[in-house]
Amino acid sequence: MHGKRDENGELVIDLRDIFYLLRKNVLIILLAALIFGGAAGLISVTVLSPQYESTSKIYILTQTTSLTSFADIQLGTSLTTDYLELIKSRPVVEDVIANLKMNVTYEEMLDQLVVTNPADTRILNITVTDNNPYMAKVIANEFATVARKQISEIMKTEEPSVVEEAVVADAPSRPHKMMNTLIGAILGALICTFVVILKDVLDDTIKSPEDVETTLGLNTLASIPLKSGATKEKRKWFERGGK
Image (tube, rainbow, N blue to C red):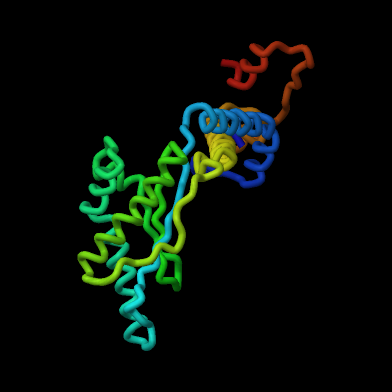
């Protein structure tokens, strides 16, 4: 391919040429993928610290709340949204920090917290991520305890019920070692492919009779074959047109 141009001087890229070019350099591309993938996997194992997740679950409806009509169902949906925001509110987060005597800020604790509502349920999942699996469990359960009290006081209702307490995670939730390795390998292959194509496109040396006709607009009358033992310097001299 090496920077072919048409008679108007515009760059022409043939997909078939790209295919043959990539096939020719497939080993280099695979090597780049292997190197990048290995580096990403090594970083995941040695540099990134394991993070553990624990989840406690609370049921937003109390014994005094019933879902017997469409209006009640709408009420339950509204309560779910309200409770979700209340759990992430500053009073709840700061009470958790104070109760556990943790030396973190409100923003730092909020970064460890994720509150979700599974579809078509009245349950809130309080998930906490920490580099210590035991602390992740303790914090998640403390959030459930504090949130229940805050919700009861603010909403003037009974405390929501705990559906499930958090437990110590058996394995880290991240980093995703295999996923990071795969992403690194794909990224390496893409970068190498781009470099190979770019290098070939920017190469405007004349290497074939077709290049002479395309670049100079002249017909090729004859060609001089190089002997198998010709040096690289001679080959480059011919490719430069004897310059």
